[in-house]
Amino acid sequence: MKSGPLLRAEQVVKRFGGVKALDGATVEVKPGFFTLLAGPNGSGKTTLINVITGVIPPDGGRIYYGGRDITKVPPHERRRLGIFRTFQTPRIAHRLTVLDNVVVGHLQQERPTLGGWQRGERELAERALQLLKLVGLDHMWDRPAGELSGGQMKLLELARAVMSGAEVLLLDEPAAGLNPSLALDLFKRLRDLAKSGVALLVVEHRLDLAIDYADYAYFMHEGKVVLEGPPQQVFTNPLVAQIYLGE
Ligand code: ADP
Image (cartoon, rainbow, N blue to C red):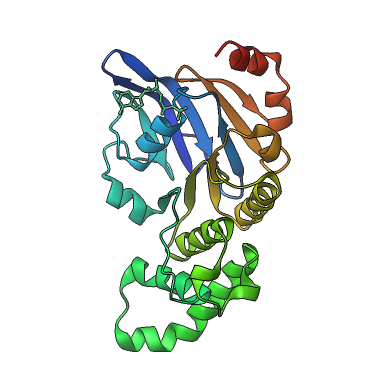
């Protein structure tokens, strides 16, 4: 494999009975890049995310992570390696503070002994605060996480994932349910998070909103990547309108 991408899903095929959900899809995700995964309903985006996390075994193709073939590696092991997926409903502890929710991410990583935990507590809190700054939540650090808005909770979950060792974050429609201005704010934060060195692969329908923030885009149709490149270039391609109109 060439050097560069942290994660590569290569020629992935997945059938559900007679339906070919994925028909040879190839995508790459790089550290520091906010990569969009777009395409109409049923084009295979969610299935591809599930094959990457390992919850759905592919019928063909390979998944590489850091150059290693992880096609047969189970989901919990992929997570340990740094591949995280976040869910529509953020899983956060509402009564803990915003900062504590991020610090807890570290405990998920390695179960330190009590002594080790106390010694490292200050550094952990500093690291957590840095991550909160990155996602724009540092001013809320001592508030109960239950006070955050829906969009802020998603950002908190991402900060915690990075604290837990996430190197690749897979997000399925993170802006679902947010009004356009909050969605824009979320995408801006995602871009900042990516710039800090995380590799982001984001499924998103509202292309007009994401287009200015993403670094690279894949456009899927019928289980294949039919277009890829800089988002502006991909989404102004007449094929995109044709595919949406033909739905
Ligand atoms: P997208 O996320 O782009 O909307 P999906 O990956 O959810 O697309 O679906 C791709 C195709 O695979 C669709 O035709 C969908 O109906 C089918 N599909 C997805 N998951 C299943 C499943 N568990 N069983 C049967 N068909 C499925």
